Length: 200
Length: 98
Image (cartoon, rainbow over all chains, first blue to last red; front, side):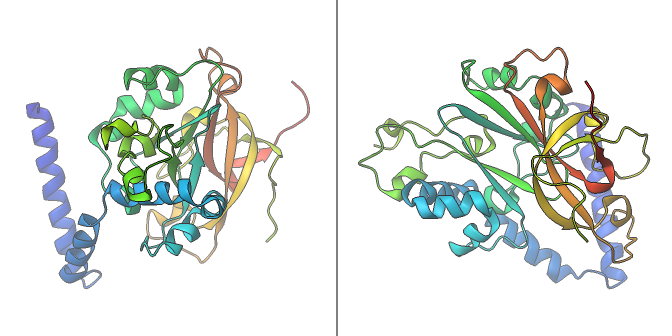
C-alpha cells in the first residue's frame, strides 16, 4: 500500500468515526444499531448467492420467478435481504452478463458480502462499460464474437446478480455440491461457474 | 402517476450539466436507448442525498443502449449492449430522425 493510500484510509476512518459519534450523540442512530448492522453484514458471504444460483439450476420454476422478481424469489428461500431490489440476469450459450457500478461500488451485498477491492477500483469501473471484452479477457475469460456481452451499470436503486450457466458434467451432483462451483466472480460476471473436477 | 415511458420505447438521456449528487453518469448523457423495464419509484437522489425529502417519488427505468451508440469506436460486435438505470426526469422522448 502506498503512503498516499494509507493516509487516505486513515482519514476516511477518522471521518467515519467522527460522523458516527455525532449521529449517536444526536440520537439519530445508536451504537447498538451500528453493532447489529455490522454483525449482520459479517453473515453475508458469496455462499448465499451461490445457494440461490444452485436452486435456480435445480428448480426451473424457481429460476423463472428469480428472473421475474429477484427479491421475491430470494426471500422465498428464507434469506433476509432487507429491502434489496434485486435483478437477476442469466448467462446462456449466447449471452454473457457483467455487473459494474461506474458511480461508486453498488453491489448486492445482501447476497455476496463486501465487494472485492478491484470492483471498487477506478480502472474496473471505467473499463467495464467501455471495453468489457478486454476486461473479461484479463480475468481469463475470452468470449467469442457470437456471444453477446451485456453490461449492467448499477447506477441507482437496483442491484444485479449474474446467474451463471450450469457447467456441463454436473448431472450427478447434488444442489449443495453444485453451489460450491459458484464463485463470487461468477456472480459478478467476470468468470464462469467452475468445472465439477474442482469439487469431486 | 402513469409512467411517461414504456418498455420498448426509444428514449434519450437528457444532456445537461449537473451539480451535487446525481445518479446519471456523464458518459450516458445525450445517448439514445430503449426502455428495458420500469424498476419502480424511488426518492430523487438529487434531494435525498442532502436529507431533503418532500414525499415525492421519481420513477426509475432500466434503459438498454447499444455499445456502438455509447462509444462510436467500440471494438466488439454490434449486438453488445449496456443497461443503465435512469430516472424519469433525466429522460426525454427520442425524436424521429437519424
